[in-house]
Length: 416
Ligand SMILES: Cc1ncc(COP(=O)(O)O)c(C=O)c1O
Image 1 (cartoon, helix red, strand yellow):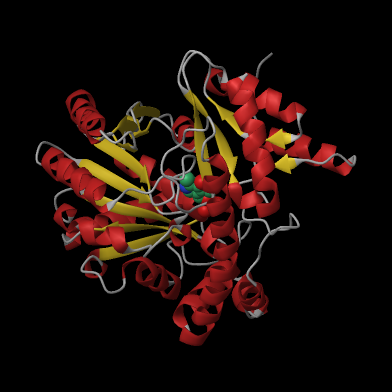
Image 2 (cartoon, rainbow, N blue to C red):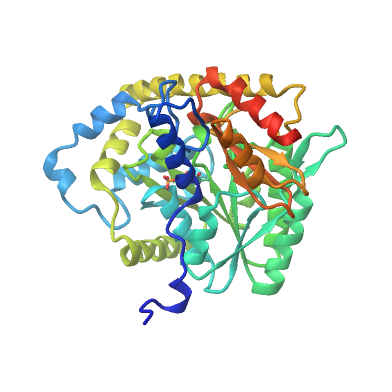
């Protein structure tokens, strides 16, 4: 007799990325030479997690009794202030912001689906997206719908298909009376894409116009924002026209920013100039916290609040992160260099943990991935033979010295 309810009776427990990673590690342990570009964490050139020593030290210094007590449901005030400041300090958005703690950025994504969609309604995101978006939607009995992510420009470059986004936003307003958009930028997972200023302006324009027709919420997932090229907060300058017109929120994550994937620090930041509505949002999100994970990891939040709040400590952590980023940037350059003149086609990639190489319709990403694995190179195939797919390459976990081999193996498999 099945004891699970029908909708839960065939849930896959295993994430395909974790399965590939396990296989790659097992082969490496048997002495094979393996390039493992599946892991979504920044590893050093020896394959160890690139931790930030001052963050680890600060975590150790959290007083035992403080660490052991329950955190407030919405998170400690010092942490919430620090997180808002981390993203929005110096921008006009800051004065309209509230935050609620969550276990990682994932928790914030979950909070957003609960607060902004009824059961049965769908969130909207780009056609290439981080797989757990779908899991989060499923888990909350919501759906996920996509807009075609890229269109080719006249010079052959890819750019965000803002027209496709606009069309879907209006379709959601028409069919479900509201829309919730997840935008992962900068350094989108899985494509590595960061929108340029003109793309942000176009997206904001479309959102503001759609916001006149009905309730739109846009959540910017900034999990990787400190690893892009240029000023990580530059895009915020474009968001002003949205304030008060559409719901604007951010999924903030400490996992990558502080290289503490296991500490589960995150927050949802909501920007709304309407004080009563903003307070209602805080109440709803806090209630949601209580009803799911109760409260978050207290010692991690206290440590991150201290790092963000003490200028010298923050500067030290920033310097350590800059070193890790330098490592990553070297791999990005090596990838772009090695890919020149090959069959690899991928969106502009100038920083971040991942890139995704396009697989044209008619070719099977799964088979290409399998062919690469025969040569000891692991990437994450996305999609199927009948739909243009891709191969996600986690440069964050590949030493610069292995990048040329990775590209060569992929080029051969794509040409076969
Ligand atoms: C696109 C994206 N968003 C959010 C997250 C959130 O991660 P976490 O819950 O560890 O903060 C990740 C982590 O891999 C991610 O890739």
